[in-house]
Length: 312
Image (cartoon, rainbow, N blue to C red):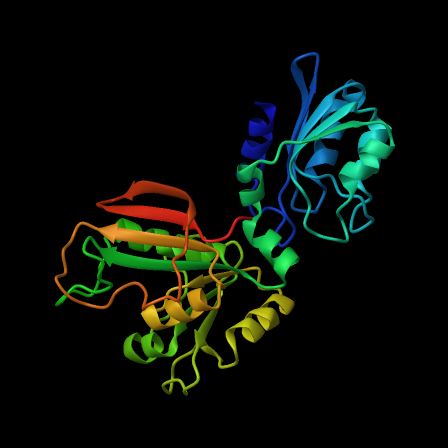
């Protein structure tokens, strides 16, 4: 139950420490919370914030933390050492650290006599889903977004939009939360999209705006062309610091990414409309894909379906 509080703290501080992961931590002694915190903008880790709040009350306490405490000297000293020094007797963490440079905190704590439990929380892993993929796989976390009619069409004859105003605003919020937004060459040439975040806060600034295409771009289209193999381009983007990529292209781009197994998360806005005809979400795939953690929620008059292609 207290790990839930640590997750809440991390969610409330989402992106505060970007590009570093956000961590929430709670200290409990004799059934009472004596300290809590989340990663700060300056990089101070959530565990250290919680320990500073608790002070001497940390001795003999249990720490609930969303991510395995780090074991290396980075911009801050190892959290595992600070936990031991504070006299914490037990640590419950929600997700292993995938960063090979920082991992090993759980073992370090056990070696120093601290009881350690890995709670294996999906929600804790999802807190830093983009960062986890970037660190573990060396490529951005890829989200494919589409708007569909109830009969599965990507377009409605005679209409500019498939989804409603609330859904389109949410897309702008999504753009503001990722490092890059991309379409395919066909969409770029047909729609000349801007791909920027408009009418919403952009604390990270505007995302990079990309086109994956072999062909040239129309003159005057202010988008970045990426014409190499998808795996090579994603690796290059990761090396340039791109942790998350939102795909907004049509079925050609979507199918290419799915065939290469490069999509991690699927967001589908389903509108209460029957188009009767039009392009579909994907072309044929060589095999079925089983998705996980499917959820649905209303967004204005539409329904947003969210699911994961890969486990984190």
